[in-house]
Amino acid sequence: MIIYFMCFILFLVGLYGMVTRRNLIKIVISFTIMEFSIFLFFALIGYIDQGYAPILSQNVPEQATFVDPLPQAMVLTAIVIGLATSAMLLAIAIRLYKKYGTFNIRKINNLRG
Amino acid sequence: METLLTIILGFMIIGAIYALHAKDLLSAVIAQGIVGYGLVICFLHLSAPDLAIVQIVVETITLIIMVAVVLDSSREEIKSPPSWRSTINVVVGLVFIGFMLYFFDMATASLEPFGEHTLRMSQTYTQQGAAQTGAANLVTGVLWDFRAYDTLGEATILFTAALGVLTVLRMKGKK
Image (cartoon, chains in turn purple, red):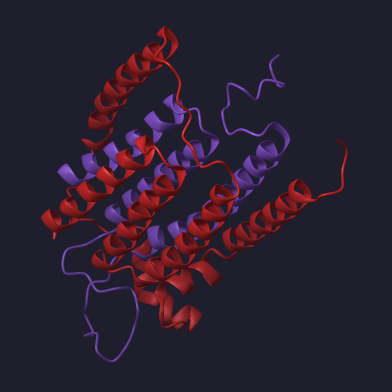
């Protein structure tokens, strides 16, 4: 059970960074850390003790228990989507840096409503 | 198994905290690599080889993009004199973290302990997956056959994100 809590602490570290950091790159880093912790949580839930990786081959006995393949498939989808979103965030960060010359979100204040 | 994973997770947490507090942005990005590659090792121990392969590729690509972005900039972390505003941010963050931990404890009380997962829906996938899809790898069987619409949506998101990156990074455009 402790491992679920460690996983959630990793998520909270990312959340803390997202709330308190002012550097755009560090905000992107915290975002990816939060993503990673959620991927790990899904993989942890699907794990079964002494379970085989869900691949059928001659080396695997007939009545073997497999690890749950459903969370793995979902995480596989989510990892690729995470790559796409972080690439998008970094592209926006590059654009903002070219325009304002800083990553500080306090200095980028044209969006102030 | 659980202690090994806990130790790796502890290192990942230390790397994450260092990444958030590093003075140089380049070392922050490298420290984020600790978290990503630690995740690969965790996936390998959780017998998820597909995830480990994909995570290595994705982490490497993200690291390369981030290093390219950081090397193009001044690389310095923003130093700001401590103000009441940042103190309030930290305090609110810590209080919020306490609340989240409490609710996480409540939420995971109904969860099965680590390593004793019971297959519900995926019982069908593991038993009849090979016969119904013809895939030796059950994860790809789920991904490309049972849940192929998810994969279609994923491809759509990937394409849209690529279009978005191209649009944002295009040199021409309104000033």
